[in-house]
Length: 271
Ligand code: KIV
Figure 1 (cartoon, rainbow, N blue to C red):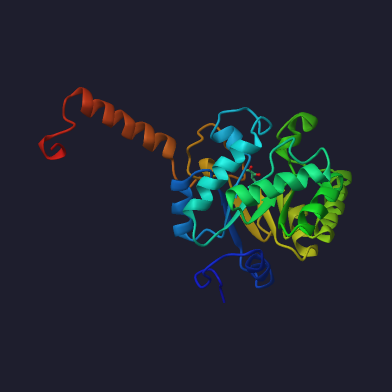
Figure 2: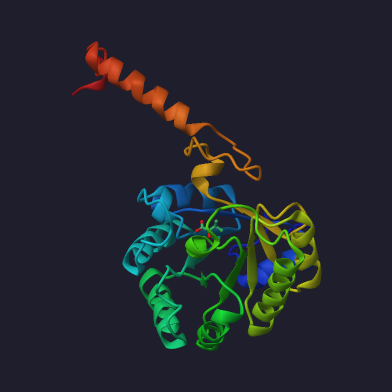
């Protein structure tokens, strides 16, 4: 049995149902109206308005510079496009780590001003007070452990996390804490598949992986990577479904050539 084609609106409860019935959850990032409309129309379960917008939309090297105002702008554009999927929005770096009151204010702005359905934030025990406060205000929270890009300067590299036992145990401990605090789902980024399996097996909430192997409850990719718009990013976990960089470049080349050769517009393409 699959709930995929049947439901009108994906909620956090739908995701829980999917986990219980072994139906994998599909999630993609989106940052604008047009792409969100296509993904929603295709039947994606969850759109993440990720702070990866800082990289793929704004061209920053890390996710750190993006502001709350920018995240709200992207989230508003996505929410206007969708009719079915769940929209989760990242809390940007610096907007929730300070204290739980600040975290709640950030979450409330995203829910109120963008019309998002849930928020995501990075970290474990160190942010649990903020998570509890946000959830107690009625806002669903998705956790994020493993490679957490907002901490990149602490990690030093984008290498696979939690390969050693000590870090794996800490991750497991934090995953339990996030579930107990009331998170409705958890993203695990770039960790060994065996650890992804262990977390997904123990936790009752859905675990969605990006480079966390095949045994978790769902998968997420950054849309620019999945569609082959980013050219020089080829981690092992990435499956490219299109090569849009080359396709768009070639189409643009043909457009330029048609203008230069005076082929475009022709008689049928004018008034
Ligand atoms: O911002 C983002 O795109 C993310 C995904 C990588 C999970 O957090």
